Image 1 (tube, helix red, strand yellow):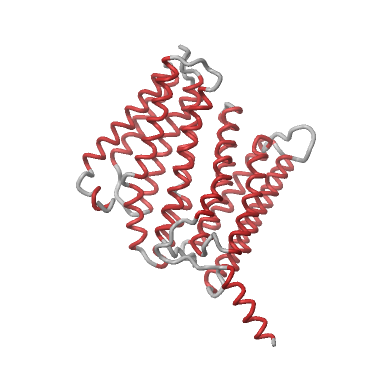
Image 2 (image 1 turned 90 degrees about the vertical axis):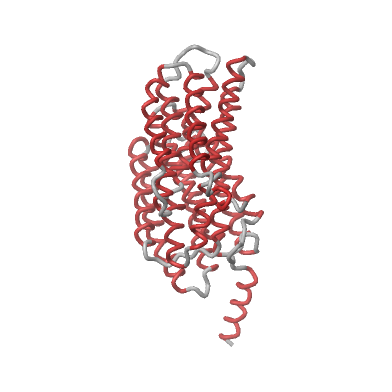
Length: 403
């Protein structure tokens, strides 16, 4: 009798979970799932712009890191089982609602508004719902894989330890909250990394994995397009504004190009060739961890573009805050590329390393000069890098792109 009930439960679970196979692409439901992160990235950018300080940027990046960690968790889940099947669809729907609650509370992440619920506490509570739903459903999707289920059981330790630090942080507020949020991320990310080095994670579809992360890069680049509109809002149409808008679009295209023209197809080939533990290690190091500076760099660069558009018609200097976001954010984006390439076992991209140095050297001048100058130089520097790489890698491009 007991065996019969167990068989029925396994049959029911099998019907609710469809394993992801090699060559599986991203499902449409995952595209829907990502929409709450579009709003999340916009809210983080708004938070940093409103704070207009180094502390506000740090806090914004901590929020972005929390959001990235939740998104990455469900990317792993979607590579284990199809996200458009019954169990995962229900779980990810609940997670979407909880993530949207996180998005709504971002403006109150450090400063609770008068009246209503405690904003910081609601944010942390919704975040923990997302994490716990993920681990429970991932364990169900890993039925029949003892190694993966053991890995997921271990993952509860950093999750709960980080949760305690987050809750302690919101109870204290202010600078202590910032420090405890950073400590929570360090504990969570650090323990997961250490336990994953020779762990039992699985990447069933290299195609799904690279597509999934490419879509989030596009999502972040989309924020730089939104930033153009936000910066230009409530301003009369003028020649400087139109020039700045065109330059902003050029920067967004350059950021897209530098990832998708060669990097994305080359890394997909490398990931597809790897198998087993080697593939999982690449996924952990190059994507789950290595992609965060890429995303953070895009969001910061978008913040800089927004500031440049907002002051494009004036003759005042761009200022240290927006120049640091514009040049420093782009430099961080390219540094993320270097880390990504290193973890994927590619050589050093000398052109991108030199471009980072150029951008950092240009930053003080960009802060002291009008916004249009800073934006123009950034667009020219990125265009020069693209041209140089197009010439250098002309022979290998057709093979990588399947032409």
